[in-house]
Image (cartoon, rainbow, N blue to C red; front, side, top):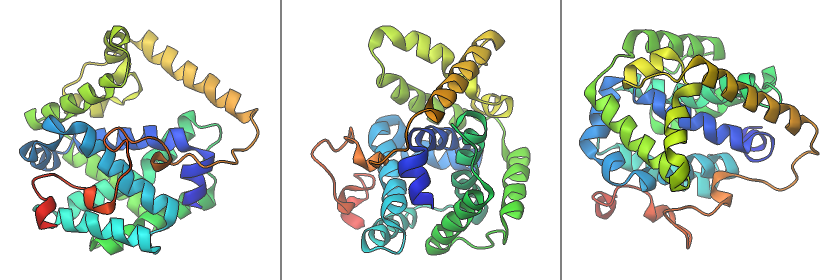
Length: 263
């Protein structure tokens, strides 16, 4: 079911929601300190973004128990073993993969996820968490969502490392747009983000009128999409040209350059 959601029903929305999920993880100082220390977002932001997108997309497209899916999960685990990451931080990051796409599509999707799809997201990412060796994953959809909300309430706090990693990611996102439009995009980028996230990143909110305009534009998009016929060709992240790997990639390409010889 997650395969259908990410590849057919909501490919654009899932990608955008996981970009928001990425920003949310930067709001946790224990996470941002590590990300800032590695320098991957500062110096290799496009590759870091693409590598994450590839791993996520490969398991969504092929399944975590397929040979290809297993290979990418194992590669991710091999990378993570080189860093000291707390179990609660792992749990929180995992939870964003469950709930951010659901919340995004509740607001902006051409339809919300049904209950079976919501549960499918939970069980899919719980299975990934098991394969990552994450402990104490809450046993139900509701319990994991409660953990997600309570963790954010307790752990979101401004730190300079949050702002530095987020600024590097913001520069990356802006680089995808034509140069003349970047000031406008930069100004409008925070308009879909909630106040706790903005405060933790040290970002200023956009004017309310701009927020309302952006919300209205996405609502119009959702209404237009409802009128289109169902997608018959998949559009996973890995089905597109990957900026870091225009000629294609292998599992061995994934990971920081400094670690690749040790993976």
